[in-house]
Length: 353
Length: 106
Image (cartoon, rainbow over all chains, first blue to last red; front, side, top):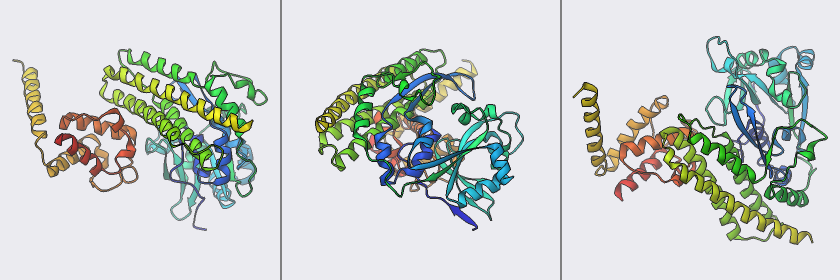
């Protein structure tokens, strides 16, 4: 077959990080998968890490289940293959990816995007996750989803040679995907969509428990000790508002403010998904329809979006006097969100009695 | 007066005059000036169509849009509220021109 593109949505419900953009590209429009998606992605967490590319300290924010979602979602069948396996089974990475796509498998892994972005040889690397969902044999290219090439999540075509170059040079220590899994090796994920049968029903018990944990900023890392027991100093739940705000206000006071907006992209996506969840629960009879509740949560989304966009604007025009307004949007979003989610939780609890 | 001071005086005078003039611009003038501004601010875009979708056609994201809004505020002497910075509100450059016109009319 000269060309093959596996199904992906052009408008994933959320993107934020590459693992979310990948999962939501594959599953956003699937009714069975929505049952798992809306049962999860409620708890927020953040902690400081060293930025992979710059070495600077950054506030890493994510919606749980984070990057492990690709392996744990029952509507995906994900195999972790080491580089040695890939070489042994197929010899060539380009052949491997084409054969995988022919079988209906998406490919996800860390590639050196400096080699892909630059026409000339560069002496640095830019290891980043790439999502590959199709190929064009005549055009000798792969269809990919990524944040790097257009400074936002977008679909692009990369040549076979670019992908080969980007794959070959990444070592185990640079493969942060396998490093995050504590596997310490180099490899790729092969992902199959597995949505024909309903393997997972909407879990209102999990939604109620996680909403409670989110609202109480409860430390939930102990739920995951069976998989990993190395933890950073993590903040959970609505307290992430305070941590993110404190960090940004500190940056505003710096002589040359330099903002990292990524944490706010994640927080905004969290609100977008929560609004979709509330509407889903109402549409499917888990909550009674209540237009006022929807309108109130839309205010949360609107204020978080205003906060994020204002921070981008401040980073462009350097007008830090707008910090007061930024703080207001943040606080309005937090207060309104707590009020709406307490109401949602109370109504779900009542139905469970 | 030093050259740099004269230059600054000249630029500021022109800028103030321009901002006064912007208020009385017609829709076509706003359109032309916005196209010039897009070319200055985002030169990678090339030929500008006011009707094309700015995300799919030109790859505009939140950051590049807000960059353009900041430049528009300066150029047309208008102010966008913090709720008017969303990419969803401007499917095309024509929609951005419409908001600028609306602000100039008020």
